[in-house]
Length: 277
Image (cartoon, rainbow, N blue to C red; front, side):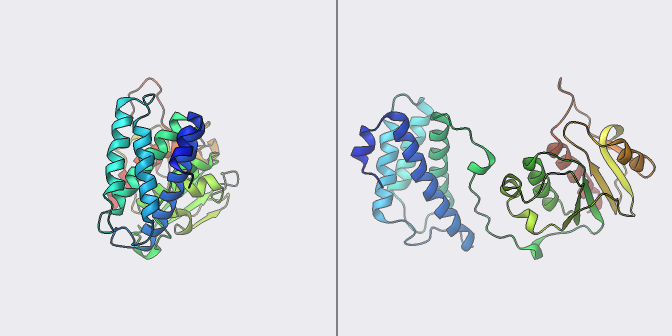
């Protein structure tokens, strides 16, 4: 760690970036520890006394920076109190929140956009045996181009008990780093495959112009089709859905008149899961 007196002499942007880097590294270490423990307490010896002293002094240094708004200065002061009074019996999440808040404030202040890979997960490897699965609840992701959306949809599918995900040939790769980062381990525990043909089961499409979601008869077993961000569900897939269970639509009331596909997907799965339970 660079001494505080040297940090204080650096140009402001460089100083903030270096502190953000230290806090980001500390949060990553803490998350690795949290993933390996069940009680949520801080692992003894994870950080040295010198490191906590650095965190405390760095937070106090930031609190004196009058270019930050008052609410940020207050947060830095509160974080300094957390770092200064740390003990192994305190909830590790409290320490993580202090580290995380400072990290993201500094990233924002230095003009660094916070992409999905800037967020640090503490989940570790997920246990597929803990999943509640609704047998016969399948989804088909048709030409979802954004790895972020694919990852978000995997995470949503895992949360609502989807048994299997089918990807179209031109769907973004779930193993793309952005997809994996956003899915937070769900790609490893939700069965999936890439294919063009639809399975032999009832089919319905998430698309405009269909039955309002609160009136739709969700099946106990079936395949939900979610289409591309730009074009929606393809005519071929809509034809298959219309000849089966039809289309389900989400009533919306804004000027935009549309939702991000991963958001709409989550709403549809929550309704479906509620009908199955």
